[in-house]
Length: 297
Image 1 (cartoon, one colour):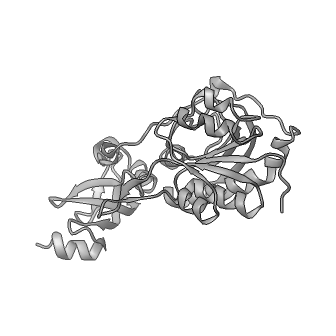
Image 2 (cartoon, rainbow, N blue to C red):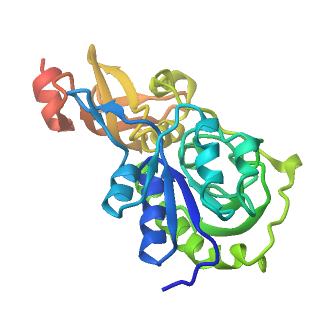
Image 3 (tube, one colour):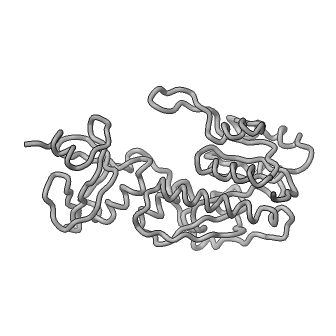
């Protein structure tokens, strides 16, 4: 069990952050509060559901704070008695400097890219979309400027050009959680100091929107289109019109010649050959099922 020097206030919301919270708890770190986004409506029934991070906190009898505005938790942080350290993993809201200053040595962030590359909200998708051969996780000190704080440690991860975003995110979540628990004691006792990023080398990724998923084969190569499908597998998904039907493409490969409506020619002359899709019925289907059901004749 890892000895802890400071108590932790954990900020997080989704599956990526839940991995780190579980790891902290399992390694014996003292998490005194969890800050997560308010419960939201999810699923087809649009029922109000708590975040996974909240569920884990409640299972471990950890107090949960769900502020609408960050200044709502300032007094609660101050009332903890000693100055805690913050740990933030995929929380989903900007933390103002006034809140960061309530922690010592601040708030530690697990970011799924090799900063200063891909500062912003979609680093996992961007690494796949742009064909990177390597990505990783940066353990950094949060700053008010987006992902611009100094970095304690980076862990590298090789890409093989087959990963989907959900697969890569899961691998990076595990990698980041493991590294976080390894170096956190050194951060707490001050023996590990962060190094400033090179702002001149910074690149940024954007918040993805539904319209980003629309496939426009006339503007991209077949390789770019295939990467888009893997990058946008979870959201915003890759959408196209095939044989007059609106579909979501979930898996494809590149070919040099087309033989059916599921072979889509791109601007480099090569074809995106669709292997799997979600048809108008909402079901996932393979090529044969779609052709028989929607493109016959």
